[in-house]
Length: 118
Length: 111
Image (cartoon, rainbow over all chains, first blue to last red; front, top):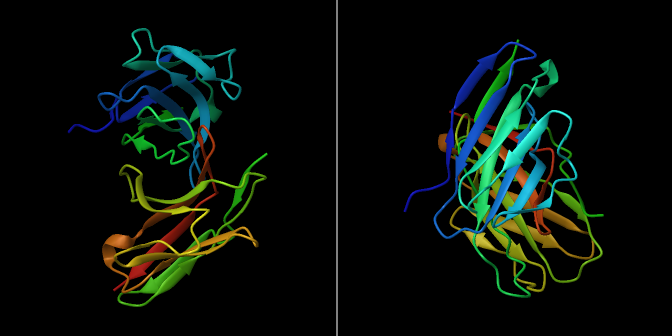
């Protein structure tokens, strides 16, 4: 079974340029997450989708970041315009549907997209 | 709000020896899970081990085991017979609709 697929793996851009990251979750996983991981730190959630609906985007900087998951499968995360501080690894993760009362909550991660803003 | 704290930014261990990584957390929930994830250099994050809070028995997965102290809200990871492939960043994580991660511990296994 294929895992979570992300592209591109690496992206170098100049500040003020736009950038987009793509994620294809594991088949059947209805929940999709975008995390940002700064160097040497733990991942921090940007946005979480349940199917097509963004159910937690409180940490997404909405002035420059946007995300979509139009058909409840693939997702795109966009930054426009990029700033120097956006340099990080952007991780996509997915998880399967959970039964009521199920607290297991395991996430399956992609390899990440490393962004360098010059 | 739930929080997860890892107080050891970096650790090293000789190959074949044992190392323990520490994690503390805070939650008001009574039934929950705790995870340890491993992130090798430039590779994807994978689940190493999980612990169910209502189980008193500590979880074990081959060379990996946890010491779960619910009252103290402590959740440490013990790696026995360390191998070079264990070199990675390790994250303690708490699932609450999303995963909340600690700051991570970079573990270097030395030959």
